[in-house]
Image (cartoon, one colour):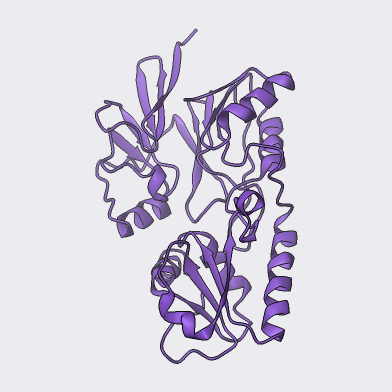
Length: 302
């Protein structure tokens, strides 16, 4: 039987199958591997310097370059690694490695306008993200999330209120730009527009191009980055809402996420039907404990 080693390395995972060594996402920069598999272009998953030969989707590589991460030694053909769309952001992929190990990266099992929800293959070993791997994080289907957002916007716009919607600038705002394109006075900040433009260029998407400026028409909706300084807009007296699954715990917005919720993660696990599960990120320990209670062989990667 081929020996398999799996352990946490930096912000990523070190995987060894026989003599082949794989680095999954942002591994320790001092670690030697044969292949560096990069699931998507969010900073917490992007290696500063890739190790070994790089496998990633073309979209991930282009977005990574936009974010200052240019990789070389890229493999365009490979037979022992299969890529599956994960529905998290443009280009995000899971990896089925040598037909045995499935690494999800970040996932969303909902179809969302331009992204197909993650439909995983079966695998003996599953390494799954657990960002919202606790039962209190239930967001509902994407349609429900959108309806909740539109009710929030309508309720406030009718009263003449200006709105700022905050989210991580790469991923959610591009989907929201399409959803809200028929509304009047929807603007993006320059930080968000940078990624809107990347989606246009890379995927050929038609996203609205109204950017925040000095002459805003009211009442307006602005799509902004989570930590962006918008104090210069205080004269408009806007209300703000964060769009994140974490609002279920911390409040301040709506639980709209690029990740699967707890129920979605459990559905993915059932589809994969693995013999062994490793959980990583977020509620890794809690999800592993719940899975063991449900008869799975599961442990967190620390």
